[in-house]
Length: 560
Image (cartoon, rainbow, N blue to C red; front, top):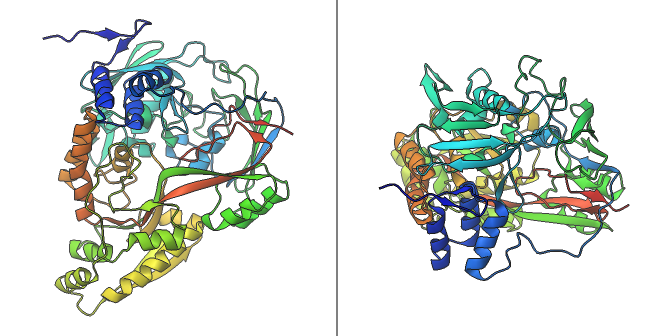
C-alpha cells in the first residue's frame, strides 16, 4: 500500500517518519535533543522543528534563550590566536584549524550550529527517501563564486567526485561509503551514485541507508570548492576562489592568515571588516599572554591548565562547551604485540578512567568507555560500567606469553599538555600488571606525520554530533583515517545497520552491539571525554563556542 504524502504549510514534502518521531517525543521515548537532530536531518527546517518540540513539550520553542538586545556595530578586525596551518586542498584537511582559516572563504552545503542542529546553508533544502537510500539536494539560487561564476549542481557533483577519488586521498570516503565501490585496493565513485538532475538539483543514490548525510556535509573536510579547483592548481592558498564573505589577503604558514570582507557576497554581510589569525605556536601560555596584553581578542582553544589564568585576566571571558572531543590510546592491531587480542585487552583492563579524568582534566568532562561513542551522542547505548581489573590483565598477559611482564612504547604529541598528563597517569596504572609504558613525547607536527602508522599512539579526535560519524571515519575497514588498521566484518555490518536505522529507540538498541564489539576487541583505551574552552575579551559580541571549535564569525562584532 502506498503511503500518503505529507506536506507542510508551504507544500514541501514531510518525511513519513516525522509524525512517528513526534509521537516518540510525546511519549518520552526520545529526548528533545534527539528529536531536533533527527527531524532536521529528515529535512524539517530548524525553526519548524523547534516549534514542534515546543508544542509537544509545552516549552519555549526558541533554540536558545534570548539575551538583552544589543545593536551590532559593523567594522573592525577580530584578532584570533590560532595555529596557522596549510591551506591547500580542503578535502585533505586533518585539523579543525585548517578549516577555520578557510571557513569564511569557502562554505558548506549544510551548517551545524553550536546547538548541534544541522541546517541548510549552500543548500536550500534536502529531502530523504523513506528508506534513506536516496537524498535530493537543492542548492540555493543566486549564489556567486568570488570569480563571478554561479554556484550550482556541477559544483556539488565535482566535490563528491573529488571526495571519493582515491587520487584525492580524502577522509570523506569514510562518511560517503554508500556512494563508492571497491576497485582493486581502493574506492572509486560508483556509476550513477551522484546524479545531476538540473542546474540546482543533485540526487545521491546510496547503496545502503544512511541517516547522517546532512551532518556529514558539515564535517570539516567537506568545504565546497569550485568545480574547476583541480584544473586551476588544486591549492586554495594560491587561488582562493570561494562563495564566502571574505577573501584571502595574507597567508604564511606558522605566522598569520588575514581575511578581508569582500563585496558581492550572496548572503547577509558579516559585521567584521577583517579576521586576522596569528600563530603563537604550541605554547598555550603565549596565547593567553597575547590576550592579556591586548594583542588578540580571541584565543581559539584554552588549555585545561590555563583556565585559571584566563579567569584572572580583567575583561576576559572564558567560554566552555560540553563535547564529544576525546583522545584515544589506540593500538595498531596488525603489529606485534598488539596483533594479540589478549595483549590489547590486558592493556585496556588496567585503565582507571575516572582517575585519569581527574588527573588530566580536573573532572571537566566524562569518563571514556573504550568504544568512541559519547554519552552526549543521541544514539549512545549505556553498557555496563568499565572498571579496572589488574588481576585479569596479569592473567591475559600470561596467556599471551608475557608472564614476566611486557614493555611497550607509546608515541604522543607535545602540543596538548593533558595528553602527557593522562598518559603519565596511565603509565602508573599499567605498572601493577607488569606492563612498562615508555612515553615518547614528540613535537606536535612530528607526531602527526606518524599518527596513522605508529604501532601505539595517543591521538586526539574532535567532536562529531553523531557517534556513527566518527566510527565510520576511524574504525570501518579500509577507510583512510583507520589509524588502528582495525578490520572486523561483524563491526562493519553492525555499524551500517545502525547508521541506516530511522527509529530512535531501535537505533540506540542496535548501537549496543556496535559499541560492545569495539569495546571487546580492545582497539582503544579511551580515558575521557573532555570539555573545550576558548577565550575572548569582553568587547567580542555575538560569539558562541562551537563544540567542534569551528569558527562561525558571521554574526560576531566588536564593541570597541
